[in-house]
Length: 302
Ligand SMILES: Cc1cc2nc3c(=O)[nH]c(=O)nc-3n(C[C@H](O)[C@H](O)[C@H](O)COP(=O)(O)O)c2cc1C
Image (cartoon, rainbow, N blue to C red; front, top):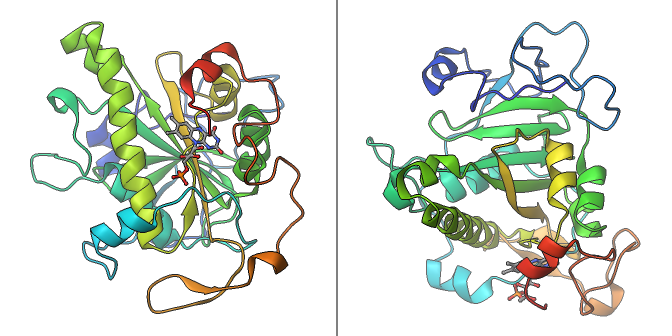
């Protein structure tokens, strides 16, 4: 069963009044009356039995300074599809989410611009291996800098399949899915608002990618996916559209952390890691399955 806290089920004010769970490692499953009926859907995220309420996990305070200058992050950013089999820290996940959509002013301004300050974007984290939280689907709550549980259970495999079998999506310790609720923007700007929402997803994703680079992490923006399948995996309501899937992990071949947040790279010839199941780097990166018409139209050649 799924819940959809933070968007339909609860107002932001109500969410703020929830007690944040400061201790990570606790995922209280969600069983709200407002949960969409997913009976009979074996693939949907499941919540734990006997749970009593929503889970909200406070994220560590995001850092507002770092060792990597913006110019260096810009110069170093490269799509990374090969991840070490190591977890991400909750602090890192929180920092990535903050970079994409964090609140940075008392008026509610965010790290990424938004047409008319309508903020139509949402971020969902599909966690497979993040220290301190269970594998599951989590929604970022920018105003609280917190995660609210959408559903438990590792959904990285189904998300990879929905992304046209791009193995980096299923292998990543976390994928951040940028979604949009167009109505928030089209309500003011009409049809043109649809364009604004997609433009905003680009802003948010670039922030996320640069933050990943600055943290010494590897990430790639994935636009080739089956919309309906991603919706299904995440349990999205009809008015919320998946726009981007961004898998993030520690780059494979990095053996030890270094001062610059990166690490000592092994020679490319001896690259360790799990055997690749999909196309190797340097070939077409946009999935081993036939792309749906929409996805094909949306992605440039790699
Ligand atoms: C809109 C968009 C969609 C993309 N979709 C995918 C994708 O589905 N899978 C993938 O592996 N890379 C995807 N990419 C990443 C590009 O392949 C990559 O940015 C390009 O090869 C340039 O390499 P660089 O990012 O390392 O500079 C996408 C990039 C953009 C901008």
